[in-house]
Image (cartoon, rainbow, N blue to C red; front, side, top):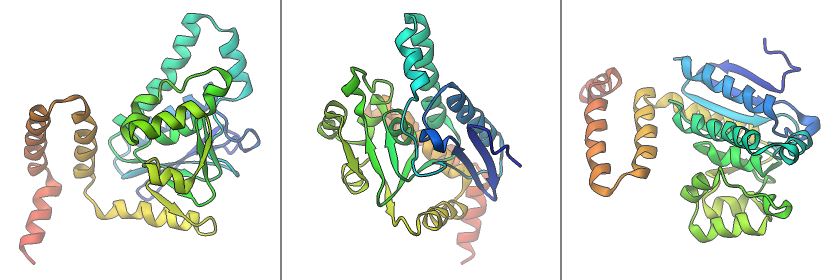
Length: 255
């Protein structure tokens, strides 16, 4: 049983690993302990062969409001080296989300702002309640959403990204879906049940095929067209050799 006093809670239910930001009184704001807790939970999920999907959510009314006041004070007083180490810690978290074998889903209720919006954007899929709000307000305090920008730029068009990060405005879940930041919107009243139903869809897919698909999708970002196709050939061959594929073909041929 997880310790309910911890800033990040982790549990596995069936094939679903659940990571919960557990600072509702601070709107689940990010600090060193939260980032470390999410990283540790992701490592646990990656080692667990039962897990087919990871979902990250926030306890209470908000998903995550970004850095907390103590973290902002730390930034203001830190040296260049200390700030670099702090920024790299967040970068490492985003890389872990991308590198995890299985899909990572952000289940967003309430506000996902600044680093909280970055955390959601860095996940593979984003599910939002109808009243959820998203935004990158960093520019209002002279800050830059720099680390997540490489991911945001791959999620939405250049002009939508530019507007989002330079105006610092909050947008609705409907607007976030329209520009490509959100995959699905669910009713506030049925959000938990709808998210669970969505996650169960991964029980119907091959874990090895989804893992290979995720890896290939992100790997081709840095390749030219011919190299991307060539890498696709390699992954195609690997997929054919997996037990899931062999069993799937055999089952299909018996129909």
